[in-house]
Image (tube, rainbow, N blue to C red; front, side, top):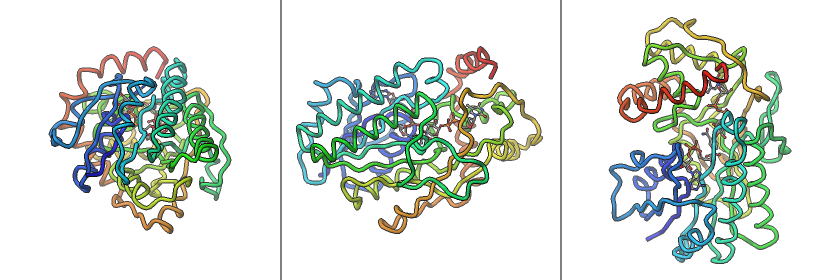
Length: 336
Ligand code: NAD
Ligand code: TDX
């Protein structure tokens, strides 16, 4: 049976991928996850114990990573690397874990897959390309130059460069993907969409950074998982694929849709302090993935996906409510 090592598999997008693999493939998964504040065992609950093993540990722990990668020996076995510090605001407050996990962690993994000659798929973000003007007709493509803005995106850019260098210099069998903003179940409530939903569910108000004109290109996490699976199955070694679902929306539009889905007034939000260095717009052209590998997203209707996400947070208060006060206190300290 195919074996996958999924780093960061107890986080938002990694756990979605593990569920996807269990539902769609005949594979076993070892999850390597440090269970930082962003990881949760609950996100993996209910999966078959004989096919999913959770190893709690650090992707920058060379001995542990070498041992786990060494267990992969079948022709279709692979590492799928999601583990990262992932929140821009946190990277502005303390960049150090971002450098450690995103750069040193990726380096550690690369050395292990090089030693054991194991296939790697590296998960990255559209933020490595910096931002676009609101009226720029060009979207990001695989040829766009790197121009990261924040400590988070710079650390992801550094990791991407390491992966490409290991492909070229050492013949490591790796593919890369850079995806746009994800939404869906199990996303940490520090992030934009779940923060607004949970504020409103608790009777608070939505909080828009700055003017709210910033644009993000939203994709449901299920579609990110199917895209990664497509690349893992049919992608060409050494290639990068951009993943996006044509989901551009301004933050203000997203807040309005969330307010509407909760039957609240669409003006029921506050403008709060802007993020330092706040990227204006991201937008992905995913033609290469669609044309060369035949991938298409399933969630065509963002407002429907968002409504389902609102329902999910309503039904999973036990998961998020215990951390809500701490998260909001941290935002309040920064005027956000
Ligand atoms: P997340 O913060 O929800 O989850 C990250 C997971 O990694 C957590 O389970 C955490 O415990 C684990 N982790 C952190 N440091 C670790 C370490 N040193 N060793 C082992 N595990 C560690 O993040 P996410 O939103 O699910 O993002 C997953 C990946 O997808 C990241 O690489 C991120 O850069 C990328 N990405 C995210 C988005 C998005 O919109 N969220 C978009 C594009 C790409
Ligand atoms: O309360 C808020 N109000 C607000 O207006 C928060 C938390 C955010 N925002 C804005 C900032 C961004 O313009 O919403 C937008 C989205 O913010 P985040 O959820 O923090 O996402 P972003 O910074 O765009 O990065 C995300 O997408 C790319 C992920 O967190 C990254 O891991 C991924 O690489």
